[in-house]
Image (tube, rainbow, N blue to C red; front, top):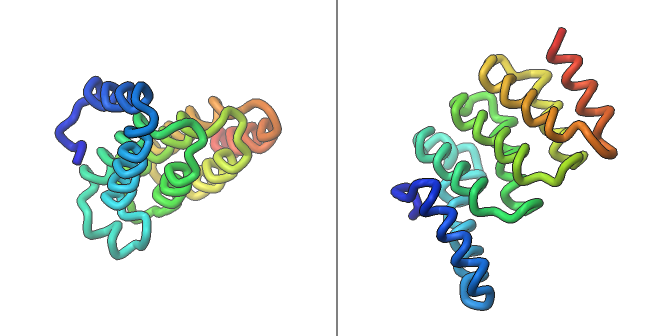
Length: 154
């Protein structure tokens, strides 16, 4: 649905949705639902059937369109980040989603990032996880984020 849109066009869709709340709230929910379906988080059989580029683009669109703290987007990103069979570009984008959509210091996001950091074999994904953990190293989740960063440094 939005694969042909660039970042500026996606932001325009988001602004339009913000300006016409009654009508566009439903349209935005539908769009987010379609992106989650394209991402294929309902099961691993669906996840492997969709190519990595389309899944990365769906996550990037979710990152740009979702409201801060959107639970469905955060759950999808956590599931994708935890799937080591997923292509690394998709896992990097999932870490970006957790960095930007989760509330600063979100304990759930930090826990998902810390869990992934301990078992992540790819250095590019680990680098993005470090950036995301650093962004969330405040509030209640500070000690968990710092422990995960120390583990990665070893």
